[in-house]
Length: 203
Image 1 (cartoon, helix red, strand yellow):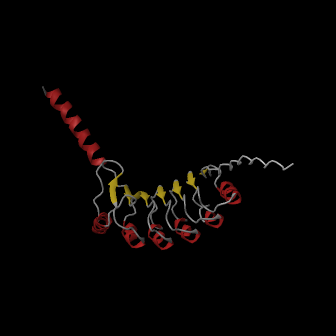
Image 2 (cartoon, helix red, strand yellow; image 1 turned 180 degrees about the vertical axis):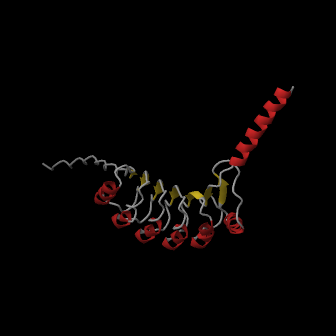
Image 3 (tube, helix red, strand yellow; image 1 turned 180 degrees about the horizontal axis):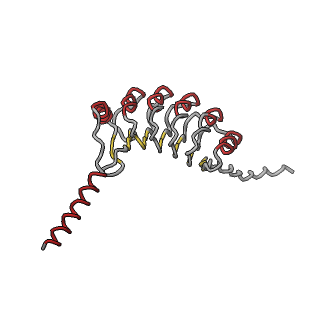
């Protein structure tokens, strides 16, 4: 009986130790306020996993209009790991709110209004692995701003103004980077109209 009691005591201690080791950090007042503001504007804020303080923030499904002002609360959430801004009215000014998100791993900026100047705000995102710039006005000059992102693994450039030269430049700086440029659909060749029969010559 004593052995059984001792066994359960050990198991209980291990369980409590494991649970304590996985305790989620308590949010600060500033973080709680920021999350509330994002949700109020229509954004979604979710934990990446149970007992994980890293956050997945998404604005792309919001019903209302999302502009640069709605991104301001992000500056108070350094634990954001994934951020989706696809299709929103986000400009270069909005990206200033992201520059201190050192834990950001995935960033969706496709179909936004950002340009080369805005990408300079991303230069310090040292843990960024995924960046989607599809359908933006980014050019070769903008890619130069990303060459210091050593962990960047996947970059989407379909329907941008980036050229082969720009791709070659960033590939030199980041040899392991996978670049997806999409497939521009070729315009179907115009069907030739059958020649109309020539009128018979009068004899």
